[in-house]
Image 1 (spheres, rainbow, N blue to C red):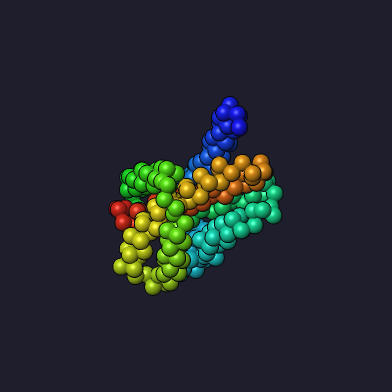
Image 2 (tube, rainbow, N blue to C red):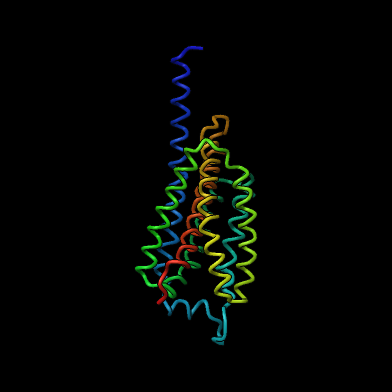
Length: 238
């Protein structure tokens, strides 16, 4: 086979891969921007008292429960049904997910001081970037590693739901420490998976666009959860 043709194909594949990752990170950073802006704007005692506390002032309002659990449902719908949804609808759900996550994250401004949030954000960004590079460059197959981490994550998720009602600080600390390892590890795993997708020239343009959005969503979720895990460990409370 002609060497020029091979080099041309390699160059085309690399360009497709670069465009795919540009889109992935555009979605990820776009979601972080939407969530961050909403979280900062709504993270006030007045907003929390008006919308997240029930009328009697004795507990959490139904709106708060929707804000907490609706992103879980939306995230599952986007990832499981993306093939049957139009790109426009996927993008709309993605934006709605980012906005709801912003409302949910607004509560951290009531608990932690701004300097702790900012410091933890940069620590999270550094850890995330390091594991992303590792996942992209490693030759080791991380499939089994990723499956194991997802099993641990499911256990953490169930324990976290239970601890909402128990309020056990030690259990919360253990979940947070586990979360740092799980979410950094899953970042490497997903980057390796995304690299494989980016180099698959057999995927249609529409499918590639949808998968870039899914990839951006997955990386966004991992970053936010890593950030929250580290914030619970490192953050200074107001």
